[in-house]
Length: 235
Image 1 (cartoon, helix red, strand yellow):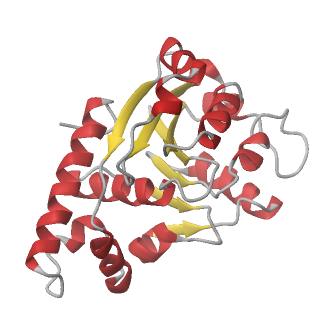
Image 2 (image 1 turned 45 degrees about the vertical axis):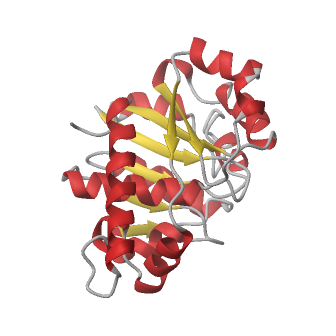
Protein backbone atom coordinates (compact mmCIF):
# COMPACT_ATOMS: atom_id res chain seq x y z
CA UNK A 1 0.00 0.00 0.00
CA UNK A 2 1.43 3.34 -1.00
CA UNK A 3 1.66 6.25 1.41
CA UNK A 4 0.84 9.90 0.82
CA UNK A 5 3.11 11.78 3.23
CA UNK A 6 1.94 15.28 4.09
CA UNK A 7 4.73 17.34 5.71
CA UNK A 8 2.60 19.82 7.59
CA UNK A 9 2.92 22.38 10.36
CA UNK A 10 0.53 25.14 9.37
CA UNK A 11 2.56 27.87 11.10
CA UNK A 12 5.46 29.25 9.07
CA UNK A 13 8.96 28.90 10.50
CA UNK A 14 8.45 25.66 12.46
CA UNK A 15 10.93 23.74 10.29
CA UNK A 16 8.48 22.05 7.94
CA UNK A 17 10.65 22.32 4.84
CA UNK A 18 13.70 21.15 6.79
CA UNK A 19 11.68 18.08 7.77
CA UNK A 20 10.58 17.53 4.16
CA UNK A 21 14.08 17.80 2.71
CA UNK A 22 15.61 15.56 5.38
CA UNK A 23 12.92 12.96 4.79
CA UNK A 24 13.41 13.08 1.03
CA UNK A 25 17.16 12.70 1.51
CA UNK A 26 16.70 9.75 3.87
CA UNK A 27 14.46 7.95 1.37
CA UNK A 28 16.99 8.67 -1.38
CA UNK A 29 19.88 7.32 0.70
CA UNK A 30 17.90 4.19 1.56
CA UNK A 31 17.01 3.57 -2.07
CA UNK A 32 13.27 3.90 -1.41
CA UNK A 33 11.42 5.54 -4.33
CA UNK A 34 9.54 8.69 -3.42
CA UNK A 35 7.66 11.16 -5.61
CA UNK A 36 8.35 14.71 -4.41
CA UNK A 37 5.82 17.54 -4.53
CA UNK A 38 6.67 21.06 -3.41
CA UNK A 39 3.44 22.84 -2.59
CA UNK A 40 5.06 25.86 -0.98
CA UNK A 41 5.35 28.37 -3.82
CA UNK A 42 6.63 31.15 -1.55
CA UNK A 43 9.43 29.03 -0.08
CA UNK A 44 10.15 26.14 -2.46
CA UNK A 45 12.89 24.50 -0.41
CA UNK A 46 12.35 20.96 -1.70
CA UNK A 47 12.51 22.15 -5.29
CA UNK A 48 15.70 24.10 -4.54
CA UNK A 49 17.57 21.06 -3.18
CA UNK A 50 16.16 18.30 -5.39
CA UNK A 51 15.67 20.15 -8.69
CA UNK A 52 14.13 18.20 -11.57
CA UNK A 53 13.04 15.38 -9.24
CA UNK A 54 10.31 17.66 -7.86
CA UNK A 55 6.90 18.71 -9.10
CA UNK A 56 6.00 22.24 -7.98
CA UNK A 57 2.46 23.49 -7.49
CA UNK A 58 0.82 26.31 -5.58
CA UNK A 59 -1.56 24.67 -3.13
CA UNK A 60 -3.03 28.04 -2.22
CA UNK A 61 -4.76 28.10 -5.61
CA UNK A 62 -7.47 25.94 -7.15
CA UNK A 63 -5.29 24.97 -10.11
CA UNK A 64 -2.55 23.80 -7.75
CA UNK A 65 -4.97 21.65 -5.78
CA UNK A 66 -6.31 20.07 -8.98
CA UNK A 67 -2.75 19.23 -10.06
CA UNK A 68 -2.01 17.76 -6.63
CA UNK A 69 -5.03 15.45 -6.73
CA UNK A 70 -4.00 14.18 -10.18
CA UNK A 71 -0.41 13.63 -9.01
CA UNK A 72 -1.59 11.64 -5.97
CA UNK A 73 -3.99 9.55 -8.03
CA UNK A 74 -1.40 8.72 -10.70
CA UNK A 75 1.60 8.05 -8.42
CA UNK A 76 2.93 4.49 -8.52
CA UNK A 77 4.54 4.61 -5.07
CA UNK A 78 4.98 6.77 -2.00
CA UNK A 79 4.49 10.53 -2.36
CA UNK A 80 5.86 13.32 -0.17
CA UNK A 81 4.11 16.69 -0.20
CA UNK A 82 5.72 19.75 1.39
CA UNK A 83 2.65 21.70 2.45
CA UNK A 84 2.70 25.52 2.44
CA UNK A 85 2.53 27.67 5.55
CA UNK A 86 -1.14 27.93 6.40
CA UNK A 87 -1.55 24.46 4.95
CA UNK A 88 -4.80 23.91 6.84
CA UNK A 89 -6.50 26.02 4.17
CA UNK A 90 -5.35 23.47 1.61
CA UNK A 91 -6.27 20.42 3.69
CA UNK A 92 -9.73 21.89 4.28
CA UNK A 93 -10.32 21.43 0.55
CA UNK A 94 -9.54 17.72 0.95
CA UNK A 95 -12.31 17.17 3.48
CA UNK A 96 -15.26 18.09 1.25
CA UNK A 97 -17.54 16.00 -0.91
CA UNK A 98 -15.33 16.66 -3.92
CA UNK A 99 -18.00 18.03 -6.20
CA UNK A 100 -16.56 21.56 -6.45
CA UNK A 101 -13.37 22.49 -8.27
CA UNK A 102 -10.24 22.42 -6.09
CA UNK A 103 -11.84 20.03 -3.58
CA UNK A 104 -11.72 16.29 -2.96
CA UNK A 105 -12.97 13.69 -0.52
CA UNK A 106 -9.53 12.56 0.69
CA UNK A 107 -10.89 9.42 2.31
CA UNK A 108 -12.51 8.35 -0.94
CA UNK A 109 -9.38 9.16 -2.94
CA UNK A 110 -7.21 7.07 -0.61
CA UNK A 111 -9.67 4.20 -0.88
CA UNK A 112 -9.72 4.41 -4.67
CA UNK A 113 -5.92 4.26 -5.01
CA UNK A 114 -5.30 1.84 -2.11
CA UNK A 115 -3.20 4.30 -0.09
CA UNK A 116 -2.83 5.67 3.42
CA UNK A 117 -2.18 9.25 4.49
CA UNK A 118 0.78 9.91 6.76
CA UNK A 119 0.99 13.34 8.38
CA UNK A 120 4.42 14.48 9.56
CA UNK A 121 3.29 17.45 11.64
CA UNK A 122 6.20 19.67 12.67
CA UNK A 123 6.02 21.71 15.87
CA UNK A 124 8.31 24.11 17.66
CA UNK A 125 8.04 25.19 21.30
CA UNK A 126 5.37 27.84 20.69
CA UNK A 127 1.68 27.21 21.31
CA UNK A 128 0.30 28.06 17.84
CA UNK A 129 1.27 24.72 16.20
CA UNK A 130 -0.54 22.85 18.98
CA UNK A 131 -3.79 24.64 18.16
CA UNK A 132 -3.29 23.82 14.47
CA UNK A 133 -2.52 20.19 15.30
CA UNK A 134 -5.65 19.96 17.44
CA UNK A 135 -7.80 21.09 14.52
CA UNK A 136 -6.03 18.99 11.89
CA UNK A 137 -6.40 15.80 13.96
CA UNK A 138 -10.13 16.18 13.39
CA UNK A 139 -9.81 16.89 9.67
CA UNK A 140 -8.03 13.88 8.16
CA UNK A 141 -9.94 10.58 7.78
CA UNK A 142 -9.04 8.79 11.05
CA UNK A 143 -9.13 5.20 9.75
CA UNK A 144 -6.83 6.06 6.85
CA UNK A 145 -4.32 8.42 8.47
CA UNK A 146 -1.16 7.81 10.50
CA UNK A 147 -0.05 10.77 12.61
CA UNK A 148 3.58 11.53 13.45
CA UNK A 149 4.44 14.70 15.37
CA UNK A 150 7.97 15.98 14.76
CA UNK A 151 9.45 18.00 17.61
CA UNK A 152 11.92 20.40 15.98
CA UNK A 153 14.83 20.99 18.37
CA UNK A 154 16.25 23.97 16.48
CA UNK A 155 15.82 25.96 19.70
CA UNK A 156 17.26 24.51 22.88
CA UNK A 157 14.07 24.73 24.95
CA UNK A 158 11.64 22.16 26.36
CA UNK A 159 8.34 21.47 24.59
CA UNK A 160 6.34 22.39 27.69
CA UNK A 161 3.25 23.61 25.83
CA UNK A 162 2.97 20.37 23.88
CA UNK A 163 3.87 18.02 26.73
CA UNK A 164 1.16 19.52 28.96
CA UNK A 165 -1.52 19.71 26.29
CA UNK A 166 -4.72 17.77 25.83
CA UNK A 167 -3.76 17.62 22.15
CA UNK A 168 -0.78 15.38 22.95
CA UNK A 169 -3.08 12.99 24.80
CA UNK A 170 -5.53 13.01 21.88
CA UNK A 171 -2.67 12.28 19.49
CA UNK A 172 -1.42 9.30 21.49
CA UNK A 173 -4.92 7.93 22.06
CA UNK A 174 -5.49 7.97 18.31
CA UNK A 175 -2.33 5.91 17.76
CA UNK A 176 -0.14 8.85 16.79
CA UNK A 177 3.61 8.83 17.39
CA UNK A 178 6.24 11.43 18.30
CA UNK A 179 9.76 11.75 16.92
CA UNK A 180 12.55 14.31 17.25
CA UNK A 181 14.41 16.34 14.63
CA UNK A 182 17.77 17.48 15.96
CA UNK A 183 19.28 20.89 15.34
CA UNK A 184 21.50 21.10 12.27
CA UNK A 185 24.30 23.64 12.11
CA UNK A 186 22.80 26.64 10.22
CA UNK A 187 26.07 26.97 8.30
CA UNK A 188 25.45 23.50 6.86
CA UNK A 189 21.91 24.46 5.84
CA UNK A 190 23.14 27.68 4.24
CA UNK A 191 25.86 25.87 2.29
CA UNK A 192 23.41 23.22 1.12
CA UNK A 193 21.22 25.98 -0.30
CA UNK A 194 24.22 27.63 -1.96
CA UNK A 195 25.32 24.34 -3.53
CA UNK A 196 21.70 23.33 -4.19
CA UNK A 197 22.18 19.77 -3.01
CA UNK A 198 20.33 17.49 -0.61
CA UNK A 199 21.58 16.44 2.81
CA UNK A 200 22.61 13.05 1.44
CA UNK A 201 24.52 14.51 -1.52
CA UNK A 202 26.10 17.21 0.67
CA UNK A 203 27.89 14.63 2.82
CA UNK A 204 30.16 13.79 -0.14
CA UNK A 205 30.14 17.11 -2.01
CA UNK A 206 33.69 18.21 -2.99
CA UNK A 207 33.02 21.85 -2.08
CA UNK A 208 31.77 21.11 1.45
CA UNK A 209 34.19 21.31 4.37
CA UNK A 210 35.11 18.18 6.30
CA UNK A 211 33.38 19.29 9.49
CA UNK A 212 30.20 20.22 7.60
CA UNK A 213 30.19 16.82 5.90
CA UNK A 214 30.47 15.12 9.27
CA UNK A 215 27.56 17.14 10.63
CA UNK A 216 25.47 16.33 7.57
CA UNK A 217 26.17 12.60 7.98
CA UNK A 218 25.26 12.79 11.66
CA UNK A 219 21.97 14.55 10.87
CA UNK A 220 21.17 11.95 8.20
CA UNK A 221 21.93 9.07 10.56
CA UNK A 222 19.81 10.50 13.37
CA UNK A 223 16.84 11.40 11.17
CA UNK A 224 16.89 8.07 9.35
CA UNK A 225 16.80 6.35 12.73
CA UNK A 226 13.74 8.38 13.75
CA UNK A 227 11.94 7.50 10.51
CA UNK A 228 12.75 3.83 11.03
CA UNK A 229 11.27 3.94 14.53
CA UNK A 230 7.86 4.90 13.13
CA UNK A 231 8.04 2.57 10.15
CA UNK A 232 8.42 5.16 7.42
CA UNK A 233 11.90 4.04 6.43
CA UNK A 234 13.18 0.50 6.01
CA UNK A 235 15.86 -0.69 8.43
